[in-house]
Length: 451
Ligand SMILES: Cc1ncc(COP(=O)(O)O)c(C=O)c1O
Image 1 (cartoon, protein in one colour):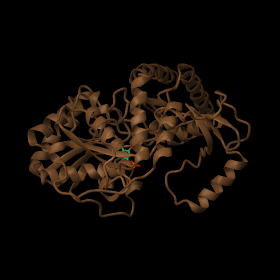
Image 2 (image 1 turned 90 degrees about the vertical axis):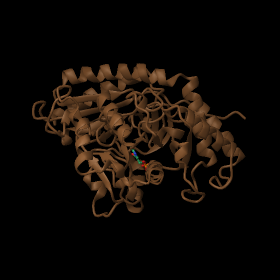
Image 3 (image 1 turned 180 degrees about the horizontal axis):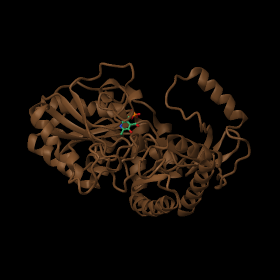
Image 4 (image 1 turned 90 degrees about the horizontal axis):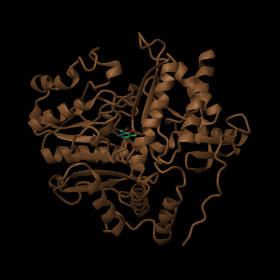
């Protein structure tokens, strides 16, 4: 069966109405009335009608570039091969009691993920639908498998918003407001956020104090024989796209090894090529025991997965399960995503275009003193805005104005951390599209600074 793909979007910014346009406004009002408050960007409310690659057309016919969708939709909107493979599965069946009956799709993607996840040891996978579920499963595996119950995380991490994962989420206090108690026996330690060091030291003269000091915590307040796992984001996402020095995780890994503590990599935001590697842990040269993944895993189809050492598999049937984990469309979508990333050599593309991107962002940093820091790893890119480079006072209002100016000029970007933006375009973006978008950001900054 061949699939009719949407006719080509004209691939340039075209703003025909004030944004948001009249049709978008109607939808926004309806959502505000009926959809519970979450994390909607009401200052830049794009309402898409269809998308292609890095582009989308909104319901009023405006065409904008989308530098947010690559966080999930790695291959860009409506990648034709992906659409075709998923559509073929849609014609066969959508759901066949995924947790209760075996399926070839589940078996295949399970084998693929076990092979792709770091570490040359026998693994298994638990399937779910979201990132928070993937993290919760990781904690359950770690606690049951080690018979220890403490989970140690890092300040600034985001691991999800259900009670277990929320207990280790510390990127913004609003996420925890009025909602205690969470999972008990969790502790958050300072992360290697070098631009804003928790210990006000400087890298590399700090000699990685933030990593070495963990040994003191284990000697004083956190008995290592009770610690099941360290959970971490290899690159903190929601917390500001913070890329730590590789030594941080290497020291952590050594500490964990010496006490039999498991490493849980929360790769929900970093997984499946965004770092230029299948998993960002590879960049740091570490091998986590457990990896939680979601977001880009099925290129936009809802899917979470947790890889675990086979020897830590749940000891009995029924200890853990769900309804939607491993459902057919998500499995087909994930298998198609792996195939396309391999066929189109997209990991190499992310590495080389990520370097090109970084150079462009560094040029902006040279021109504008309001950029305090640029942090990138592949297509995980963050820019932090400050009022003054010396004091590093966060320039939150300026950041918000820049995001709004970019939207009005046809580029969608997301904020992160206190005063940062994150740039996560799909892997298929071209160098011309990068130039166009960076140009829009530059103009947006100039306008925002004049206000
Ligand atoms: C690193 C990380 N972990 C977990 C989650 C939670 O994922 P979900 O929103 O799918 O539950 C997120 C979501 O942003 C994330 O970035």
